[in-house]
Image (cartoon, rainbow, N blue to C red; front, side, top):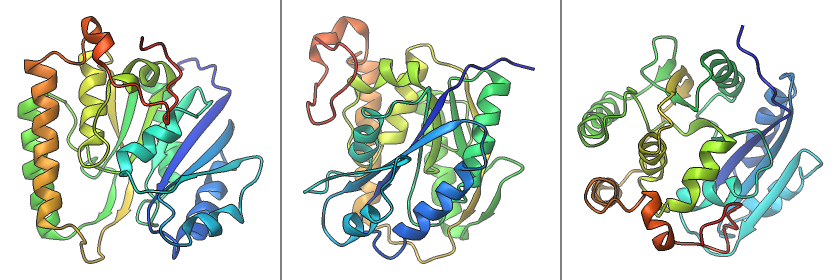
Length: 263
C-alpha cells in the first residue's frame, strides 16, 4: 500500500451568483469532509459581491470554513487561484459550487492520488465508474473540445472540464505563478503547464454529476473558451512562455499573493 504523510486537505469552492445554493453546498461538502480521516479546511472564494452569496456564506464561517471575497467578478480561474494561493494543505482541491457535483468525489480522489502516487487527479465524466446525467448536445460539444485538447497538448485524460480536481501542493507552487488565464480555459492551462513541467502523473477519478438543467453557456463563451485554449497553446509551444528561462516575464499578481519566488 502506498505511503502518505498528509496532514491537511484544502478544498477551494469558487462561487459566483450562488445565493440560492451556497448554504446547501457548504453543508454538503463539510458533511462529506467530516468523514475523511484527514484534517481539512474549506476556502470559499466569492467571485464578486454581486448578490447575497457572500453574506449567506459568512453565516457558516468557522474554524474549518473561511470565506474570501472581492468586489468585482474576475472569473472562475482567478477565484480558484485566489483560494489556492491562500491554501495551507498538503493537497489542494477545488470543486464547483451549484450542487451539480457530488462532493463525495473528493474522498475518492484523495484515495486515487495516494494509491497512484499521482501529481494531479481530475474528475472525469468519462471514467467507467462515473454516474452522469448529461444532455446529448453537451456530450457532443465536450467530446469535440476534448479531441482538440488531445491534439494541442497531448494530455492523456479523457475529460478535463469537470469542476473537481486535486493537486499536490508542490505542483501548484511550481505552476501557479506562470498562469495567465482567469476565465475560460483555466483548467487546461493548469493541466498543460503541469505536464510541461514534468508532472506527468495525471489520472482520472469517477464523479457523480447532474447536468440535466438547461445550459446557460452562450456562443460567446464557447468562442472565448476556444480563443483562450489556443492562446495557451501559443504561449506553451511557440513562445515557451512557461519555461524557467522566462521567469521574469511571469505576471505576479499581489492580490493572489503567490507563495513562491517569481522575481
